[in-house]
Length: 492
Image (cartoon, rainbow, N blue to C red; front, side):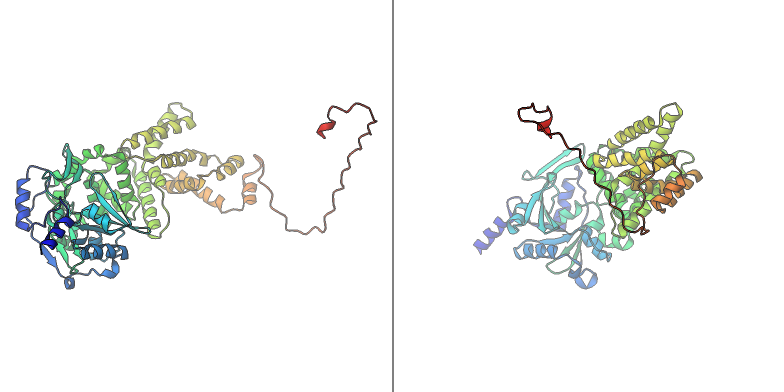
């Protein structure tokens, strides 16, 4: 018995604590009230297998292997977060995350195909081919000296503090993300009322919303994204701080905001995300130039352009087709670059120079908020630069534009711009008709303003062709013995 006890202590590690009962958690939370950690009275609700619809058939084999191995090794192991939420909504989770009382090092000791990552919070990634199962140790409420928590201006910079499952639950962001599927008895554990919020289709933040947003301002964007993805409403107390704390997003790392932007707009619910961002006022915090363009008078066409592009993007995602961030940013920032270039042209600047300067300035301002990788920003600028060239419909310029590597992306953007004016609509239709013509017929319609394209091969049989007579070389006069060699004789 003593040996088993010591083995259990060794397995749990020096930092790991026993799972605290709800009353103990309440006392710990009250003690830490001055910190940014939420304090709640937890009422654990266990939903048995017969009361929910989660089936192991819908859980990936890799996640099941991790859950079972941790459980067999004596650790607690739960499927958690978005996977449980989506399974309860009859969805198909993209990722399967696991929470456990095993430390990252203990997880690594159980799986050879595991690597440890993370600085803000240590995580274990267990890899099964292309599938990666993320395993996180239960997070704790307070640092008792054995953990590693670092807070700057109310924001968590590092948070390697471990605790129990109920502590972990109230450290999560939304109640619907704090549901745990227990592999031991196939039940669902609910510590924060997330099961009821899931039924009401409402996003409610765990803890004090203002404190939680100051901890991590990106949670505001997560609220918008999840509400758009799930079709949920945001609870009034969770949305109220957007107006006063939205400016904190300017302090978030631009690279992180780029990743969050891709989740907002390129995951199949971009149109709903855009509308929610605009309604909540967060659009001006991450895309200030877009927000300014939309509030100008007569810019309904720009809104139709953006929403049309996002609608097409959502359709492509549902059909499993590829999408590119370059086209997204070209659309969102088009109003700003167009207005800036037109003002410069009106002031007498050369159109080519005006467009180049405007695109450089718009990209530079946007990158200060959302880091756009150079491989995408260059494509964005090329799409913009080609738009004025569509108006030049001489034969030479048309065929030159058709060979440009970004022609297809620029043409698709021109088609979207058809909502701007009747002139743009006519221009887009002209190019659509031109692309449907064979090359030689298009050349005939354009006239003879420049060199014609290569002629097509003839299909008429003109009979056997005569061989061209072979040209004979003139014989070089013989050189007598002893005569001097011509200077170039050695180079023949």
